[in-house]
Image 1: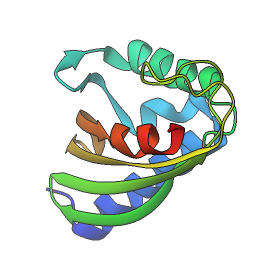
Image 2: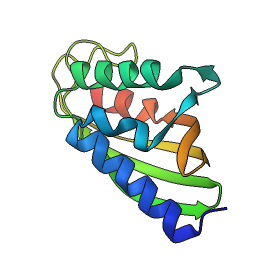
Image 3: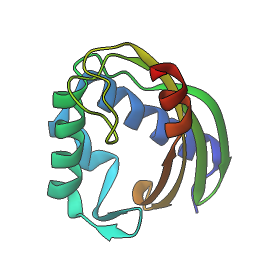
Length: 130
């Protein structure tokens, strides 16, 4: 089992990969059999999901607000300050700046992300759109 330091470094490398949109390195951080909220996506599906996120949110940037590492699990609270195009999470954002958090748990295997469980604070976005 990897150490806490190794797993934290792997996770921070993953976040840097996302923020750099360096999709060619994604498989260094994400397992080929990755699942997101119970859906089996595989690395190609996971990459497509991320690319679609960046298409809908051109200024998307992942900021780690809190991080807890307990191998093989990582828990993170991610902070976002973004301006999505069109609808986002079925909400009429249409280019308005919104701030919200995502609470996400990851299970690692071989120092790569195998499972992702994610919950976005949609209520925070709804409150900003009122």
